[in-house]
Amino acid sequence: MAQNDSVPQQTVTVSSYTRGIVGPGNKMLGPVASGGTIRVGTPPGCWGPMITPKFQGGHEVSQPVAVDGAEIGDAVAIKIKTMEVTSLATSSGVMSFVEGSYLGDPFVAKLCPNCGTMSPPTHLEGIGDHAVHCDVCGAEVNAFRFANGYVIVLDQDNQVSLTVDKRIADKLAEQASEKSCLPAAAEQHSILALARADIVGLPAHMQPFLGNIGTTPSKDMPDSHNAGDFGAFLVDAPHTYAMTQEELDTHKTDGHMDTNSVRAGAIVICPVKVPGAGIYMGDMHAQQGNGEVAGHATDVSGVTEVEVEVIKGLAIDGPILLQRPDDLPPMARPMNAAQRAAVQALAKRYGQATIEENAPITFIGSGRTLNEATHNGVDRAARTTGLAPDEILNRATITGSIEISRLPGVVRVTFMCPMSIIDRLGIGHLVRAQYGLDGN
Image (tube, rainbow, N blue to C red; front, side):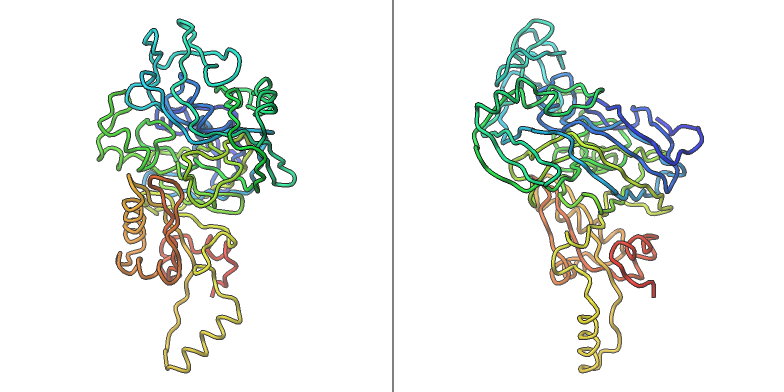
């Protein structure tokens, strides 16, 4: 849907959600002015929506916000200012599927195995694996099970957490919505209701980030499938949201990144594929290492505040990430004054006349596998910068890194890029501010 014609607002607050779908079929709020602020409270992603059969996507992301002046072929920089976990506890783990409870894809097309109702309305009866029941016939209807799962309690103030035993998990399940701190408009069942506790007494750091943040794709699709790996399950699927591979490649914006450095202090630069861009957010995680290797991490409710800026004429296919300096891989961290002086001395010793002025930049790549995702990230970097793919590979090898964001196929391609190219892209001011570089 086209952006509103109303006067641009400096601040837009969002507390409504799209029941698992992103795309032009969703009405946009706003518009927010370029330079303005969006504040969003989001419910958990993944497991809560997964056990809520009426959802046709794996997350419960926010209603999109139009950005004034954002046109197809532009980009929008999303500067993440603050991020706060509001859940007191959550549950997660490795998943398995219940055959007969879905059509082709359990994230998208759940059905009641008893009465055959597609995406049935449901309610909870008690706690545990069999708590989700069909409103139409009363049968147990959950399409997912934990292969190995845990319940974890969270301390936002001290940024620590702890998995708990079955006795405590059962108590939390009796107060699932309250302990999840689900927003008023959220429609998901809290995953705390399943009370699975296979890992007990494991302490863990907290470092919250958003797993799904970006711009609206140009065709309606499940929010969890707005990337090249999960999106591959839409190709020739037996349900409403089926696409060809060409359609998926054309329409997706790779908002579902599960990249743990997409946190407060980072900047995500996203493609504009619909008028107004349509900024949405969701799937906050309390913590995750490099690579969501378990399939799911600790999904939580939370509040995020971002500032947006339109980058005119920057036509990109997927996200560019300006990571926090402390999240950069070691080889891509800008040199300090002493190191730069040593490089100048080294150049003088060997008679090298020029020293490149550069800065780190990260391209997100996605695909069916990690290899495909890496090729996609390198190709995106090459198309955007004009550097040859082989040069991108060399730069990522000696001045950057290829890092896993998610299995089966989302990666970060980071390398030091010449500032002349970064300036040509129209993001030099963002890069210099992010990394404290001189404007000279």
